[in-house]
Image (tube, rainbow, N blue to C red):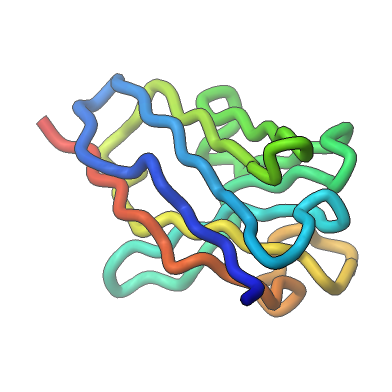
Length: 125
């Protein structure tokens, strides 16, 4: 079964850190660029970060640039999202997804066809 599974979400205080993991099963992540997206209640799903299949190219939303870092270990079939200096506005369900269509913009949701179930991140004091 082809699937992605996220973990590492939870409750963090403002200024704190969390590290999300995205593990693939049934297929090799190494053949795909991987995106991280998030969706807050009542909001559209938005792109947070992207890493190319080699790991050489990364992209970030302006709202997380300088605070979040994406990385991957293809040997472990895993992609990570290190989130530092967390803010209450980072609160959302976070999803990882495998890119299967390569358009101009990395954050186009329809270019990703394999999605995880999501992990909740809550930033609150």
